[in-house]
Length: 239
Image (tube, rainbow, N blue to C red; front, side, top):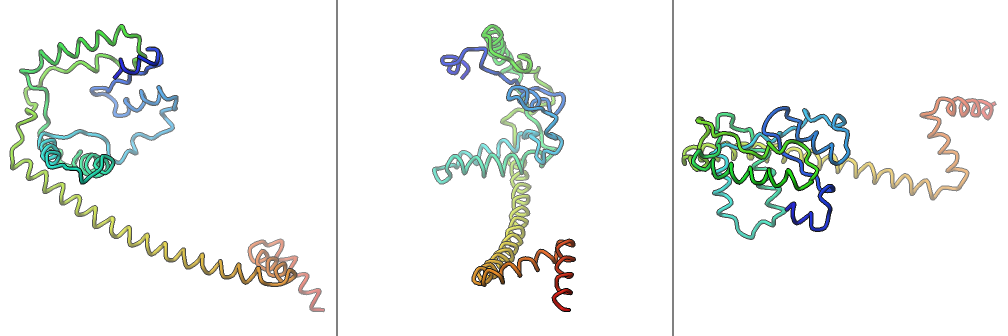
């Protein structure tokens, strides 16, 4: 991708933001903000409702099996919203803290390390604007407690699927109530608009002097100064 971009843009105009392997949760945001010229502290990163905490082996296997059943029913945009957004990011991510986390299999580490190091070496001399640390691209040593990506059992996948269905059912119930409330509010506002439209039509059909009179009376109800002046006028007229 970088080579493709550099065919039409000089290397110093290409910004490479590396994803930190750990540290402060808002570090990636700060790197991105630095590139686009946004003051990072203007955004409260702690207010993010659904942080990207990643998936465990069972969650990954569930999504993989779901993808195997995918056909042309969903457009790519619909898939991004329903699966990657609603299911993965808002439901599966962080929904099961006890889920086993996967890591790089030890047998693949030498090959992956060699490939990553070659990338880092090439990027280091390419002249790109690196925001972050190229060391972020180097894989960490395999952890003995990390699960193999293919080690999820059917029981684990079933448990994750039930949790997801439960969460999605509750969300659908909540969304239905919110939609009902929004519909009622919309009807109420529509009624107010129709009432005001009727009053406006009635007002426009009045003679000019009557429109002015009613306008002054309406203003006098909310403006103390106009109200006092109108009261004085009425007292004078009443003498």
